[in-house]
Amino acid sequence: MALNIENIVAELENATILELSELVKAIEEKFDVTAAAPVAAAGAGEAAAAKDSFDVELTAAGDKKVAVIKEVRGITGLGLKEAKELVDGAPTVVKEGLSESEANEIKEKLEAAGASITLK
Image 1 (tube, rainbow, N blue to C red):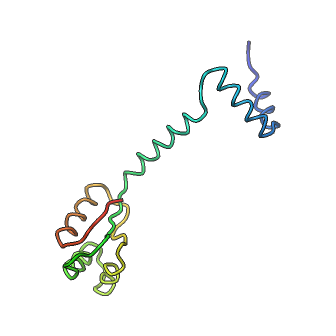
Image 2 (cartoon, rainbow, N blue to C red):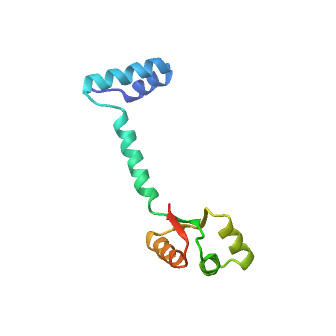
Image 3 (cartoon, rainbow, N blue to C red):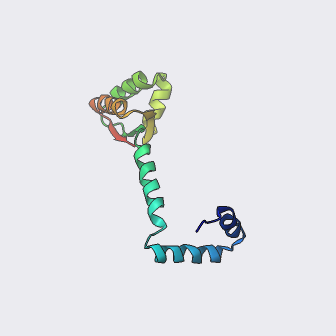
């Protein structure tokens, strides 16, 4: 028994949403499968891929604000005024799109200066 794929696709193109929904339910029941499984698997893959890139967020400057400003200047290359505005605007992202090791290195430097940091 050979299926004519073109005819099946043509039928599906002309089907209503209700008919397509009924078709999905019938296939799920007949073959004991669920249409949600592939979507969940794709979502899990996307979540894993998202962790390839990290952002360093300054959540609070702490008691040693001047030391944190100096460290932010060294990390970002910003001028004194811009670095101070960034620190004063906490919570704010200091650097984006970093590898895990780079993000952890920056986090350690800023925490050593007295800041509170979150990796996202």
